[in-house]
Image (cartoon, rainbow, N blue to C red):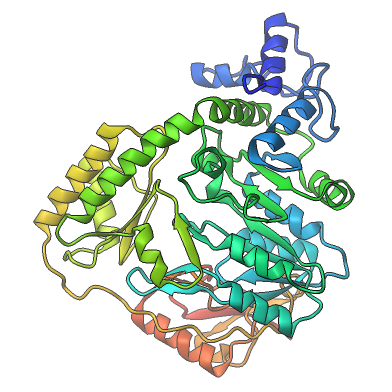
Length: 481
């Protein structure tokens, strides 16, 4: 069963037949491509012809592959996503009944949550995030905070959390599910598990959301598995809910011209992980344990380890393949370190901030790759010893005051005003300081006196911001009443 690859096999069979392709896509099997690599991909880039199946009609090769996908990831029902994990988040939010107006979401949720709330019209009830003082990052949400929000909002029927976060750190999903399921009214737990697609295939990696009791989970497979960009999947445990509400929402949001190469890559990756995933992840785990210790011993650098998470409420485990490196003991920032790695050592990390860099290793990085990173870090840290007090401490953010739902804000008129004029108005844009990456404002929220003072701090401190049209905050977009 694990060796079966229905989608990929059907595409190769069609290619083998060598028909005259008088159908979409317009490249006709690659005739319009000069590059050889693109020609190879184009060979299996077809459309809904006999044998290849229809993504929106559950039958044939695609349905066989969908069933195998569900079995591999532990879902009752699963769906292929060809527009990334974002489309799975949109689907779950769109699947909610119209009566389910409120949804608990983490304050640092991925921006796809905001788009999903605009599409669905739900009202977010934000659960605060626990942060790391060393890295200044949002790490987790606590079950106790979720329970408190449920007590205050008896009409909430859905909790939608993120685990793991971008840095590979998971919430205690099992505890959250246990506490939520104790409620007298049924409450569903959805999990944005975009960065945890590899978790089901090795017991020493963080426990998958579905195994922890989640009702639905979204995996961005291209992030951690051998899958083409945009390849992802959605899993649901309630079959009736899946067919009655999730599937129609997914079909409405999903393109009618899906990428068959993306589908084939998911099909192949699922087979690969079922056959070789355990062994490959084991080797990666050994390398991670070895090199996290070595890098952590470099003077001036620190490595976030799972043992440290016990001090952060609500956290549970950490993905061994995410390498979060603090730079508090050297005289350059994380941004400068990343630049040196790129320019002088041809090493490109996932992201950088003043206090840290984040490197994402994969199952296909071998010992020489880890060693190259280690030696580069050791050499750079030796050249830039000491600490010139470069860390920028960002104070705690004020509590958000939602005045309009994301959908209402999206369809409201907006104007740009000088910064002093935004006080007391309703924001029309996202403003999030990095780190920790938690929005201090989202469209539809009041710029209260406390929020305004916080924005003044960000503006004066020249803190890196995500979201605003004017990153200097000289002007701010507000809702025009």
